[in-house]
Image (cartoon, rainbow, N blue to C red; front, side, top):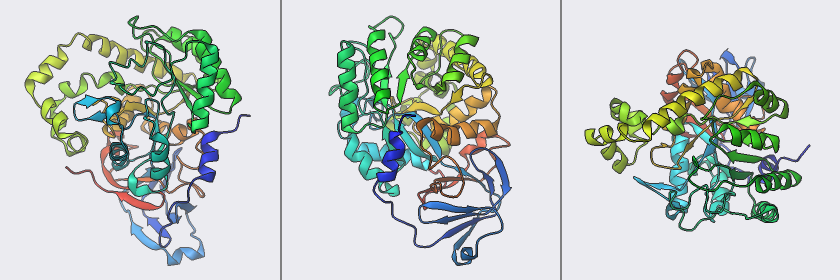
Length: 444
């Protein structure tokens, strides 16, 4: 079995500051990441959960007590696919990759209950010191993991001009030897996993050659690293699954998956992150302008974005765009393929590509994705499991994603029950990270 780099990093990470005294969370309904435990007490000591359920241990009498009567408690959400430090208002590009902008984005993820974020490529060269700093201090936002710059195609995806990559940190190997060297270099830098882009963007750019992605995957596995791959189409996914990729990092959106691929992914343990919101975001905000008046969305938007999206002429132009029919078809196919893969027992992860572009709204996108998971036929409980326990498992993060003794005290407290209606995930009352209360209700 290959060693898991993320877990090794957790064991050697800088110690987080402990809470001053044990904390007992009482009278909340608890969803532990896999099932509904009902009204159950949760005891926190320092950064960890130390006890769940009754009877309580004797030392619980000394704990500070918090009454969460009428609330629902669940693990903090885990994003397996996001980006940070890549947007500023209506603009995007790596010129915005600064320590302050990354922290800004991680704080926003955290406010929306996302307590672990995997920045899947296009990270600037300062990713590594920023990761070390924020992971040692819950006050700086969600815990950060990621793939550094990632590995893309020469003159291809991710398209440097379209993505504003002026200081392009993406490795672009020309052959198998350079692909192996890129993996070695990124491991030496300290990446948590390898990101590949295998997509010709509908025939507009060259696609990474099979010999290159096969070499990268083989080298990564030999070095104990998982590999996540950006794709769009079925043929790309099939080729990567044949090459033993660990994670398909976007939904398959051109054609329906076939039973053979479903079986192969299940048997190999290939993870699948649908990111349905990535295409829905191209039209949803223009189609639902009333949502812009809700504090939950308004608080997530930079002023320039909010002002632009409120304009009726922008809404009309956006919905009339040439790419919108294709985006709608992509969402429909993505949902159908997610339904088939879930029914076939394929391992699911959770992510939205939030932060890559302004319309992929950090924090809000994750709550939309929960709703979209239920539109693919998952129950609210199953959708929450995908976004917590399953998402942590996909990355090998064994210390989070569940409310259980020994796990990190990364918690989301809701005013309404998401098991009854998944949209109640938006009723945020408090956010806890590493045993500290770091967020409250979403207000403008």
